[in-house]
Structures are given as structure tokens and as C-alpha cells.
Image (tube, rainbow, N blue to C red; front, side, top):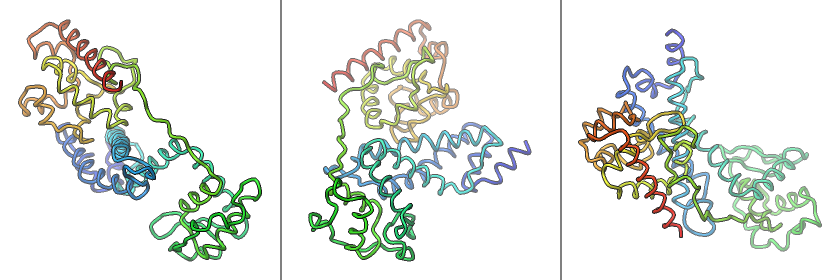
Length: 350
């Protein structure tokens, strides 16, 4: 108990209502408030500042992909907070806002590394040259973004506005085979006459050396029926990893809403993630459906669902009792629901 108290005292005060909640209902409400009112707005802000979000061809991520990424960050934050509450000796989160920012930045970096491997390799190469060559430097500006240029410019926290792109063909070293990276960087910095954002430099050199990443579109989903985890076996991947594909989950949710009521109940009330926790409790946190909306498609009063919220997932016997049917009928209903979702999802991608 003393360890728990000491760990809690080291945490940010905004976390205390959640960490000190005496029952699951209060903890769930506090967690939802932390995520929805504090973490998610910060996450969206970081993603839009770190990545180019939009539908045009020169964007890093589409609006849907940005939402997917925000959902991934949310899941990581929820997992970290649950770990902190359950483990009294877990490392304290002393500044929650800062922890959210760092988690979101790491998620953006990982996304870019996966989506643009050749650009990322070029970025690492250029950064290595600048940090291991006399006269060059990489440093942070006042807002934490990376600038680069001559070491003599390190006291400058604002990048210069340059029009180097208008004369790319006149820069020496535009052919990688004819010039070393250091020679090209020296020429770029001489033309810029001031520090450049690191990302702008990488884009410039990528244009010069024609470094391109080919982004392959996703043409299919995995073979697990509609991406729904099984409540009958623990061997399948949990829904927590599938939620990274928010757009897929939203489409899946729409299909679930079209199922017969008893199939919805048999499927949703038993869903669990890889750790055995109920999946429905995550849906309001990532904005897929509110508790009242979930209750609506289950054809039960919101108050009744709220009373069951902390007992989720329910076992088949409990679901059978609520539907006044046998346990085997619950299993059959869930199987039918999964098969229908699998067919409908496959049809939607043909």
C-alpha cells in the first residue's frame, strides 16, 4: 500500500482522480475524461503539426489515416494508464501532457519510417553526415523541431525562407554519383545562407537524387472473419491490435449494426482483447460509439448496459440467461454473426 501511495504522489495531479478511484465505475469515467478531454486533442494537434494531413497527393497521411494513428496512440495511452493503476511500482507519469506529446511524436515517427523507408534511410544518412562532419550541425528550435545547417548558425532558432527549389538543376551534386553528400550539403547551405528545417532539407535532397518510396495500396484484409476476434479461443490476435485500422473498424461497426439483434448481443457482449478485457469499453474512448449508442444496437436501456459495463466481457452462460436461450444457441448466434460479417466485408472490397 505504501508503494502505491508513493507512486501515485509522483504522478501528475490530473491523473489522481483515475489512479485513486475506489471502484471500476469511477475509474472508467475518470479514464474516459482523461482520454477524450485531454489526450485526444493533444494527439490530434501533434499529428497535424508533425505530418502533412489531407487528401492531396503530396500529403503524408489522409484524414482517415490520421484518425487511425490517433486511435493507435489512444490505445497505447489507455494501456499505460491501466498498467500504472494496477502496478504500484510502475514508473510514474509526472507530466501527463508531456507523456501524450512524446507518445504521439513516436507514433508519427514510426508511421513515417514504415511508410517512407527510402526517405527515412536518406534522412538518417544526411543526419549522420551533419553530426559527424566539422562545420555542420543539427539542433532544435524553440518549439522542438529540428533545424540544420552550418555549426555557426546554432544560435539561430528560426529557419530562413529560401527558394532553392527554383534552381535545383544549378546546384552542384544534383547527381548522387558525381558528388558526396557533404559537398551537396555545403552547396545547399551556401545557397540558403541560414538554417533549414531538417525535413525540408531531406525533401530537397530526395528531389535532387530522385529518392522515391512506392506506396502499395492495401487491397485486402486478413483472413480472420471481418477482423473480429474470437470469444471462443485465445489463440487469435486481440482486437486491440486491429483498432489501429480505425477506418476498417468504423466500417465493421456499421456492419455489426446491421446484424439481427440476438447476433449483435451474442457477438459484442463476449468480445475480449488479447488480455481478456472487454472490447466494448474501448469503443467510446476512441470515438467509434458511445455507451448510449452501443446500448441502442443491443436493444437494452443504457442504464442496464452501464450496470454490466465493468463485468464485460460476459461468458456465454450469462449471455444465454439474458436472452433466455441455451449456451449452445449463443455460440451458434455468434458463429452466424462472424460468418455474415466475413462475407459482407469480403464483398465490400471486391
